[in-house]
Image (cartoon, rainbow, N blue to C red; front, top):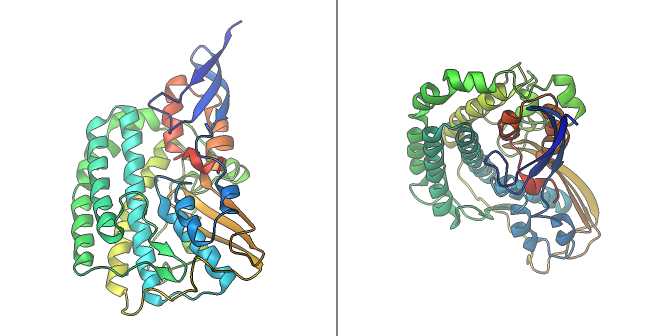
Length: 365
């Protein structure tokens, strides 16, 4: 009679989208947690089998609303591998710059959600403002602020317009100039340390067993990043580091988000300096009548949440025979979250959820 079943979310500030949890609690201690990903965005993979190769780009973007650009990239990589399409060198650099801008924007959105959930409203407003500056760049380059459909088979849709490189540098300097403010107000704040330290701890062995990637695995001291392990685009053209910490708790995971943003900014500057001239796109056949050669392919990249994989099969037709995504939120939002919540306090549910960086549509895609 001391145990109680408690429903948490989706209306709670500490939940991501339509996600919810069923908690078995005793007092304010969680005994067991069961995740319900909500099923709002669902069935993308099956729907892709009924749409032509080119029409699937708006579809894959919806799998991760916060960072659709990695979904564009992984789908383009899959099509290119099946069809044997080469990408120009300049397009590789533009893709990497574009993806790192998307990573910065995604991390700022994650910081907004986490800081807002802990009550650091000022930091949350800063993060959302700086994310809007990144979205301004996307809007100028692609015409869209959220969904861009900029990366596609053969390269990218268009080259950087005149003066765009200078705007990227100016925007990143604006964001980077506020890092001391973020540090003094939030990251080095005693309240953040007390709320997040030793909360939602996951060991390296547990993270590996449950399929943890991204910040979850790097917070345990493992420098695992697909951009290093299996380089793609232009990630092997410039030097950069993989931020890690060892504690495996919410505090470490959010610190890695901060360090990755800074590393991405430095990487973009290096890529801009090294970017060659040339074409940004190799022509493909008429995309509305395009038939991809029969075969299968598996490709992977590093999204802002960790390793993102795609297994795709073509039977030689006008649309994919099968597409299956390996998304970070599937393991983070189900197995890792449920494990991390065992023994935790009710007040830390949103804290742990936000630190795991879950995007609900990635689960039931």
